[in-house]
Amino acid sequence: MRFEPHFGGPDRPRGYLRDLLAEHVAAVPRGGEIDWVTYYFRDRQLAEELLRAHRRGVHVRLTIERIPRTEHANHRVLAMLSGPGGLGEGFRAVAHAPPPGFASRPHLHEKIYCFSAPEPVGLVGSFNPSGDDPEEEPEIIDEILDQDRGHNMLVAIHDRHLVAGLVRHARRIHAGNHGILERFDWTMNRTLHSAETTIHFWPRIGPNPVSRLLARFGSGCKAHFVASHIKGSRATSDFVGLARRGASVEILAESTRRRVPAFIEKRLVDAGVKLVRFPHRANIPMHNKFGLLEDHTARWVVFGSYNWTSRARWLNHEISIVSSDRDLFDAFAQRWEAILEMASDKES
Figure 1 (cartoon, helix red, strand yellow):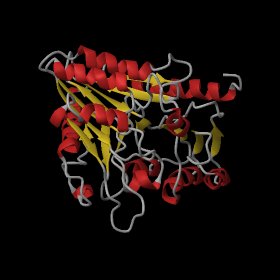
Figure 2 (tube, helix red, strand yellow):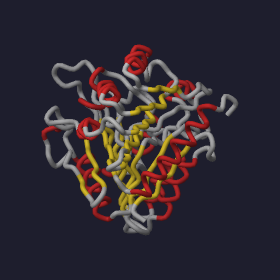
Figure 3 (cartoon, one colour):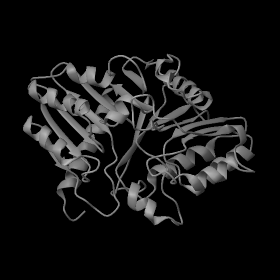
Figure 4 (cartoon, rainbow, N blue to C red):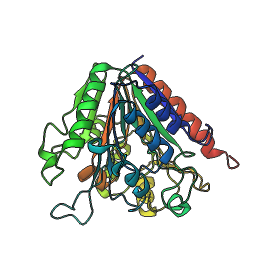
C-alpha cells in the first residue's frame, strides 16, 4: 500500500487526526527521527509527546510558522518547545518579511509529518494541530475554527522514495535562511516523482503546476473541488477557464465570505461553475483542499496544503500532491460524496 488516506470531520471522533499523529510519535523508538513542518501548532499535549520522544533519544526536527494570520496562536507551544527543556536545535520558528512589491507576509503553510520508524512514512495534507485541551484561549478558536472537529485530511505516504524526498525537503525548510531569493533555490522546491505521483512545492518560479494540470482538461471532463479558500483573480481563473472549456465543474466551498468572497462566488457561477457552500456550523471549518479530475483518458487527484489564493500561488511555502493512483482517487471520490451528503443534511 503506497497511500493511506485519513479524513477528519464531524462524522469522525473529535481529534481523529491529531490522535493519528500522536500514535506515530509514540511509535518511534530511540534512535529514530521525526521531521515536521506545520503552520498552526497549539496542541500542548501533542507538543509534550514530541518532548517525550526527544527525551527518549528520538531526533526531532520541528519547524513552525512564527507569525501566522492569528499572530499569537502558536505562542504557548513555541514557549514550550523553544525554552529550557525544549527541543533545542531541533525546534525552529520561521517568520518571513514581505518581499519587495508585496504588502503581505509569506507564511510557512505546509503540513508535513515524517517518521522514520517503525516504517518510513510521511503524512501530508490540510491538518494543523491547532486545537488545545483544555482550551484556554477560545477566542483563537473563534478565529481559526476547530480543526479537530472540522473537515481535514492527512494522507500517509509509504513510498520510500517519496518519503525520503519529503524528509529532505523538511530538513531544508528547517535549515534554510528563508530570504527573498528562496523561490529561486532549486533544492528547496525540487519536484518529487514516482510512477503515478508528483509532489510540488512553493514558492517557486515558472508556471504553476496545478494550473497547468487543469489547463489539460476541458469538454467531457468532470471536476470536483473541495476548497477552504478561493481568493485572487488568477486562482479563480483556473476554475473559470476549466468551465468555459466545457468541463463540468463543481466546488464545495467554505461557508465564510472571508475565505471565499461573494464576488468570487459570482464570477465562478457566471462562468458555469456549480458552487455549494458547506453550511455554517459553530466553529466547524471546511478546511479540506483537494480536487478530482476525470475524463475518458485519465483520473487525477490533487491534494495538500495549497489554497486557491494569490498568497499561496506567489508567496507561501505550500505543498501539493498530484496522483493518478486509482485507489487514492477512489478514496477521495468517496470522501467527496460523503462531504456532499453532509452539506445537504441541514441537521448534521
